Structures are given as structure tokens and as C-alpha cells.
Length: 242
Image (cartoon, rainbow, N blue to C red; front, side):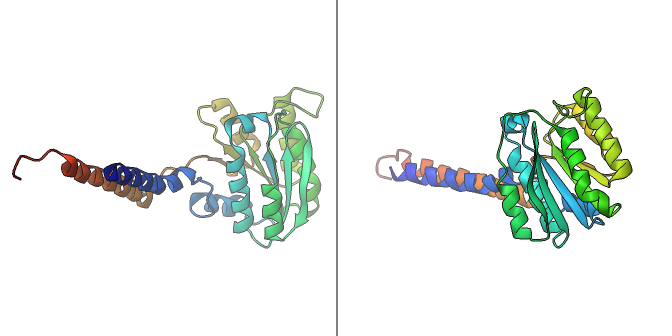
């Protein structure tokens, strides 16, 4: 019984060491993502973050990743004016312009999943009202997992989003795009890259563990293996008289 408890404890320890690695996202507020934020929208004084909470985001569980990215941007550029939008088959102003980081993070956390379509052209158009007055010192950060599936314009969804993006870049401000967990979807990747301003597209998802994190994983596995080996020796039958 004691041996079983030790094994369970060792496995729990190794799982605890691995869990932070699996939970960590590549949009952490340090490293390459932070560099991208500073390079793409760091010069803007007024920034709109539009978060896709459509059905595909819900189905794949991508909203937590989008929220982490949004909060990382707010924290990295603390002190600037932000507005927060969510978009599915409609566009919702979750938080109007403010510089209060706590208020912005609470607004981001309040966004819920939906099962609706993706009205990307509407989100881009609505962001313009916030950024156009301060052009060129404004920016939109669009977070989404693919191409839009509905349109506000009288045309097909793909063309509508392209038209909205072209108008935004020409008449409003910088359009930065975060593609979330695109995987092997080459069409979505090309589409999002093309609608973004030059150098303002990035993909995010699960991060590759760092050397330190790999070290923790190996340490946990070695510890579990060592304890299991000691238990096997302790419980192995001993020769008579030993």
C-alpha cells in the first residue's frame, strides 16, 4: 500500500511539473510575441482589440488563447488608450476607450463563447470609429482563428472582409492580425496575412517548451522513474536468510 502511495505521489509531481508547460501560450507578455506587439502597434496611442468569439472558436477552445493575447498586449502597452470589441454574427463594444489596465483585463475576461458566425468585416469597420480620428497613431488588433463566415456588406464573406481591411488600412489605421491555432489551414493563413498591414501578422498557439521547461519535465520523469525503481527493489522477494 505504501508503495502505491509513493508511485501516485511521484506521478502527481511529474504531472505538476509538466502542467505549466502545456498551459503556457506563445502569446506570453515576454519574448517574440512582445517584440511583435512593440513592432506592429507599439507606436499607436489608441488601440482597438477585436476578439473573435464565434462558433469555431468555441468548438476548438480557442477563446482562452485569444484572451491571453489580448491581456498581454494591454499589459505590454500599459498607459495607452484601448477599446475592446468582440465579434461573432454581431459586433459588441465590450469596453470603450480607457487607459485603466484593470478595467480592460476585466472586460477581456468577461467575453463569452458563442455558436454564431464570424462577422469580421463588421468588426473591422466598427474599429475604424475609434482609430480614424487619431490616424496614423491608432491601430486595430484583430484576433481570429480563420476567415469570416458572414458579412455585413452585400457580397460574399471573404470579399467583404477583404474590402473592410483595405478600407481600414487606407482610411483608418494599422491593421494587425493574430491568427490563433491555424494549424494546417493554409487558406486562412494566407487570407489573414494578406489583410494585415505589412509586418503586422502573427500566428499564436501552444508554445514549444523552453530549455528550462524541458529540464523540469525530464526532472519529473527521472524522479518518478527513480522512485518506481526503489519501490520495485523494496517489494521484490528476498532470498531466505537475506
